[in-house]
Amino acid sequence: MSLCPPYLTYAQTTALLNELGFNAHDRECVLDLTPTIQSDIGPLYPLNRLERMLNRAYWLGLEDVVSELAVTDQAA
Image 1 (cartoon, rainbow, N blue to C red):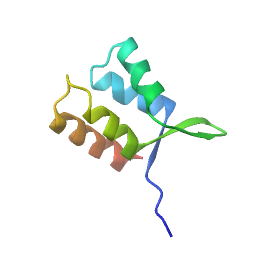
Image 2: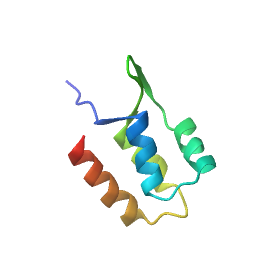
Image 3: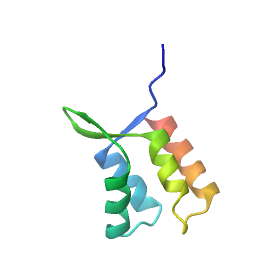
Image 4: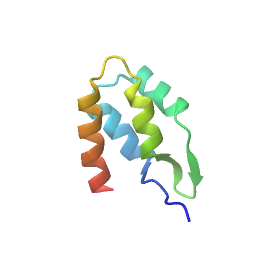
């Protein structure tokens, strides 16, 4: 049995990227490149895949990403 990672909705993911200081173009890039699961409420972003993508964003410090995702994970 495999465990499913927590997922964020499009709105939650966009809000997180805004909090991290992404501009509209960079935000759309991350949203386009992060694999999603389609659901009846729209795309869902696996938190572990989103974290992996954000770790590659050179303008963010790893500590900023990890701490922000930890807070988001607890709220999800």
